[in-house]
Image (cartoon, rainbow, N blue to C red):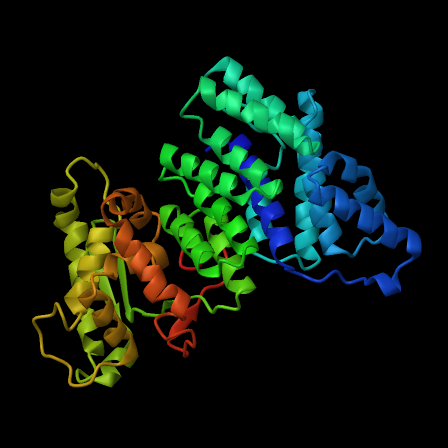
Length: 429
């Protein structure tokens, strides 16, 4: 996805979710501020709700001067600046506006605006403000899209919708024309039509997370909480390493007060490889102290299996790849090798929590889904597209059975469950 597309996606994510839930409270209440400032805020809020971001811009600039510690106002100002960039023809001016917008998001974060949303937005905007302006290889369709974005930023929804739909007539595979048509209908309150167009976008590219996530907003507005949850889940499993997909499901969890967590299966085995490719396996002393009765000692098989993959099995399994990488098949095989379900060694009498959870995941066929969504590194994540194509249902089941139930604990995870947080780690949402 180009930076230009990311900026559009970022804008709609935050605008839709901002008005959906009250994610943070401004530090200055109306009773504490002057009448003029309160009036400016009310006017800016009304213009923003009408998607008249460019009209709201000068008001927001005044507000942040008068109320510099207000995270919400810096957050809204950033969007107004992006909208102004979308209506500006001069490229250097566009870049400066985007740089200012990024700085406003950073300021909002410093003042307490919630992660992961703001973090994703900061990441989406390049530090130099330079983005691509291409939506379509069809010159006419692309021109219509660029013009439509200017209309949308000014609150001219009918004009924007006309352009989006003319663009998709010219380029039927234009994902963003269908997606943004859904946005317009959503902003106009026509939720059935919004759903129709979001589904058209999904049909154009089911392996892109955005339309799933956008389509959750009108469902939330209608109080269809579970249906919205399913869309956020679909977005997350489609692009689990996308900051906006993670932000969507985390926002849903915050809005519904749902504890989201992955099962916490710590590996007491450290595996490293020297220059010759030989493995060094270090087993945590605590696993040895526990003895074999609870299954902890079996983790030594994890390291042995990974060593075999590094030495020869990777090359045999992936002959088209020249260089070794940590793969999903390796990690799943290593975890199964120590699992009571896959181990040929002595069986544990009573499993400790981590081995027991590993066995449960393995027995239910969700071990690979857990690894991809909770434990992926730079090597493993390369296996996600192929797994998604064949096993979308398993990824979905994993999130439903484990993530939205607090790590498989019915929404009340004990210490053994790792709560999904808002860091940039691939091991968290």
